[in-house]
Image: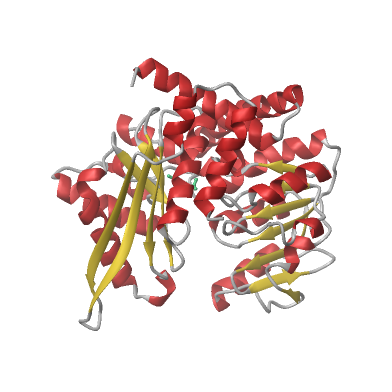
Length: 408
Ligand code: GLU
């Protein structure tokens, strides 16, 4: 099954659980708009290359489309549709006035120069300029896109707009209107809910395994290490590093800076990306790509809690098996929502011309994440449904209310 089919399956499964008008389901099964573009770029060599890009504007009942732009060689329309659908659910789980969208460009940013990345990022905005805007569609960062890239995009948007419009793009560096606290917000939001869950489950000094060492995974590793949790294993796209006494996270970050990977770092045993998922641990944090825990490996998963910092790391079939095994899965649409939450704060600050302190952002993040997390826990307990189904139920109710009040 394709990633988008998996995502829609999660929606379909809700039909038996919550009473939402069939019209709402029908409308949410498809994106409102799909934009596919070819972006011509003059490479440093003088050669003209054409990059394929997408923007899926999934749903805007609750506000402007919101979602990141992914730079990755494996990007395809099916994946971007799924990610845009999850953004719709994610923003609705948080109850923020934003809809769901997602973008992507087929490119490996490690294989082109900085100048070429800048031209591509400006080209992406140029090509889609009329479809973006602070009240229309607000792109943010995702895998492969950095604050620097978001600054180029915001700058390009301002130029074409004839006036600076920082609220058109989020994830910018602080100097050009970015929010304090955006850098590690995805991990921070996930960590907040994890801490609460661990205390509820009476797990002290947990041992943690993290798949992925990008923005989300690396910051999660840092937060866990600062709190004294034992980080047993981490992987990146090249492979995994394991130490039964716990990894030295700061050492791994330094090693990655020098070598581009953590694979082969001193005092670590080598594991592959799949092996690390199957380690016995308290908490497993998939922070990389979709479809990592599937029917094929789910029986070998030994974690007690899975915190989905990645989008869609578990297939619907595997999800069922985990549920039957009593493994607690904190679903992506809540677990990694800290990222878009602080993107929303950035948009809000830009619209109002404000700058909030680190502490303000952190408190607001807690105020947004925790009540919705508790709501999800409560509904799951009272209705005997998984946390994912509970999160979807909260989101779908809010989406239905928005749809009905607009009388679309
Ligand atoms: N890419 C992030 C996500 O998947 C955040 C998107 C944004 O900040 O707009 O939630």
